[in-house]
Length: 111
Image 1 (cartoon, rainbow, N blue to C red):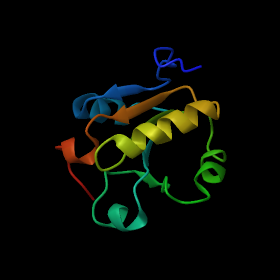
Image 2: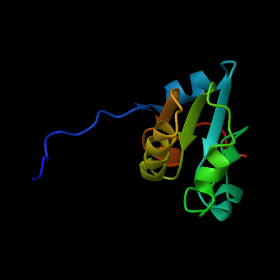
Image 3: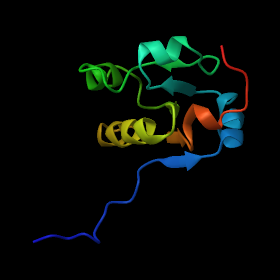
């Protein structure tokens, strides 16, 4: 009936701000901000691309991205970006990293 203990393992990694920062400089990496456009305009991590997870077209936009890149995904607190990583994994993305604690844990520069 209910199988509460049989959960699928996460298909992404939760990483620290330090690891996120280190990975940003690697080739083949895309920084993805899944917050709203308003949140994005109020301050973003350098080089981030904004695709709002709350947008009805989120999956259509995600499916246009190359699946062979390393994705660094963040939101405000890490919850929405974790959901985005799960959705992306189901769509066939394999290199997914979620910023643990979101942009609130980011100590680097914001644009």
